[in-house]
Length: 414
Image 1 (cartoon, rainbow, N blue to C red):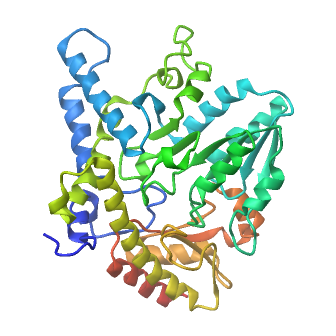
Image 2: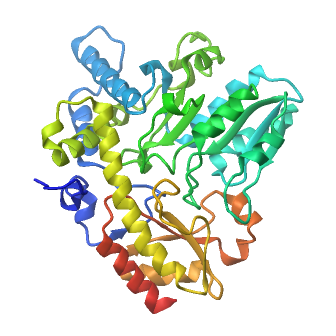
Image 3: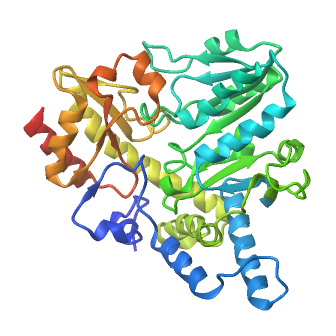
């Protein structure tokens, strides 16, 4: 057992079967590795309760209870008030598209939406497309000097016609953590709703939708140690107000089923219960004298350990990159755990991003180049000719030794 509150990497890495392979995964923002508990639950569901829900026979009833249990766990994990505030879908992109199509039925021509230029297109295109219906879309642009979204700029964009502000909790390129709680307050004071894409945030920090006071919040579980699926949270009264996106006989009161056409994936949904269980087990391993506390407190303490470790990883890499005069870091240059997650992007003044990454491939290290579907920020920063950025996306199962190997590989190239 550990003797101090420092993340035990041997324990952590034993929970991820893929890490036994001789390969260094540093493209985690594209998709994390999967917990053994998730894999076990998928197999268990398919082996024992793979039937349609809602039947009177015993196996169907058992299957329904299993899925209900996992839904409750995910609701508790993000601190939703009730399980019916959780909508499951195949991807964040699809869930946000469904949300935009249903929510916009309540709006009129001339109503306004504000989106950020630092977002993944999943939380931009679905809103931009509403311009065909006469909805006005305004762009909240990053300050090019600080690389942050300034609240003063948002306040100048807000108007009595604003219906929604849409942005990321953390950028999948910059790694910057946006002050969502503060932004939500400003948005609500203006009489509008807020929709947050947390895909790049959820793998790194604990989510508390009550504390943030967000109206809609979405993330991909396949980037948060689970299967290829996504979760949309919505305040219950808001979800209830939406028109059904399902069959004609599934009415407005059928929350969340009305927003899950074809239903959710049963085995993947059941497997999601292993994600909060992992963070509870992580806590109990590191704090064996405190195992009787509530799950949320266990999650909080586990993510505190994770944030400390990720700051060490980010600091090692950023210190190296900051010393190279030919490198420009795109985003926050410091490793502070309250400022950023360890998704680190840069460009080289002389080399294209694509040539750097392709040379790293031979070292058995997975990093990536491109725009990562955050096209607007790449275009606004004039990085298209660079083939976008080089992105190194770390998570808590990465080690300082792996980061040093990457730096050694960069040394041979840069």
